[in-house]
Image (cartoon, rainbow, N blue to C red; front, side, top):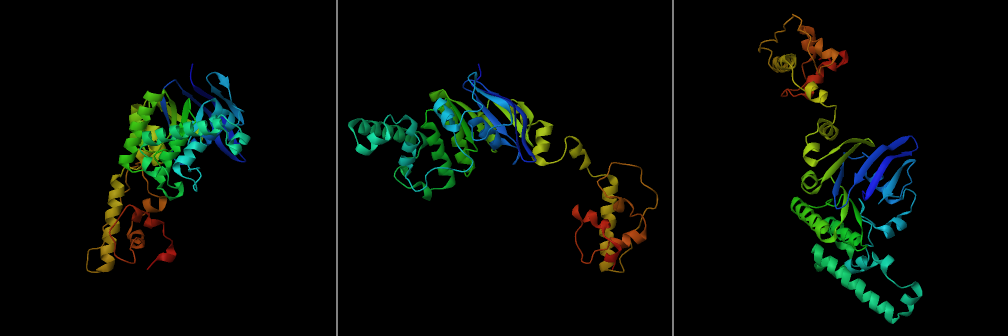
Length: 343
């Protein structure tokens, strides 16, 4: 039985279809990655899974139980632990106070007992403090134990937020960009910690992450979202070379996008013509551009119709820039200028 199963999850915000028919599964003790370009719908999926959003259609099942409509606090009590893209801790409190606050659901005493200060309250407070200190040791954060959270670096805050999620004794941990604000070395260390946490605490994890080396190293399975739809899934080694995934990150359509950016012989010829026209403009004694009037054979081109029409000296004249410049791929668009730009 899977720990988490998401089936046909869809949600719309007005005219925006944020998620459509998303399916994913997280099995026992797995670390599953959820990746995709910015705006793909990853955090929205987390919000639907953890109860902050109610999806329009689809279901979320936790260990076989339908928890689609359960609110966040109920899911937290069931074993859902989560970090957020934007750190949400109490910035005016210390690190140890934040870790103790994260354990409020397991405090074991009511508000009145806390106000009065019974012996049970004191005992439970010592236990909560000991657990918070153990988490600080585990994450290497004892140096900020009694320091206010608001004065720490963003990378440290993300690590402390992971500690707050661990303080809730989660069964499944959902991490939203845990390496945000960290350098490469810190990210590698976090990857090692995630593997250690899985081994020592028998944790199951679903991770949103943009740091590809971390995903490849720690994840057992990867899902890719793009424009709210599931684009691909599979082993990390397969996903990193998937042509549609590469195109989603770099832009364009695969593999047509790569083919369309290949320079043709006509591209190179027109670039040479443009550069020669520029030299002739600056130095009238330089040879005028020689234009081949024979039509080129039909080929795949990136050029506009105006660029392809530049086959006589009149058109070449239009290519002459006001200032001398080295030809680049961007200058190839110069034939689109209007007659009003003539010198």
